[in-house]
Image 1 (spheres, helix red, strand yellow):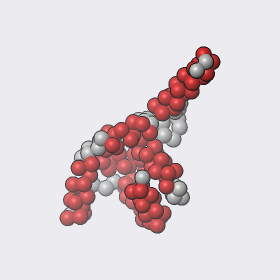
Image 2: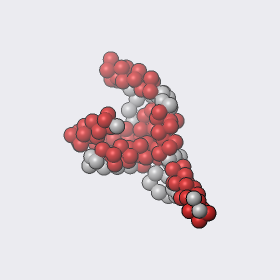
Image 3: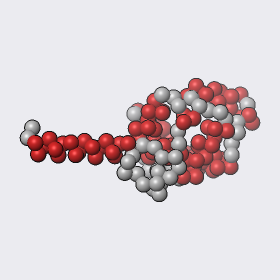
Image 4: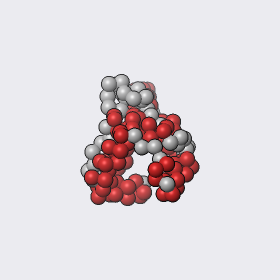
Length: 144
């Protein structure tokens, strides 16, 4: 590889790395104003089962990616909704995937034992109002 091609390859590699780590995300953007994060940090937390460590921005990044990959037409998660998801996880002491599974089982046995804020209730109502679209999204995510 010639010196010029090697130089261009190096620049491209650095730009890709910066994009993946979120260095181009501005703090005033939709997915850079609530704790930050990137697709790399969000998927790493998700893959390692660290749900309690997700920021609202990472919730938005993950749902945006799922929507894009599935091609389903559902509205993007707002800042308020993403913050509500993080609050729900915190209110119910959900830190890991096992905690989430236990919470689901608990909810099945005693729904009144689950803490649901007004913000979370609004998110649930939005999902119920668009149930068919969200079911398509869930099916697409399972395929991924």
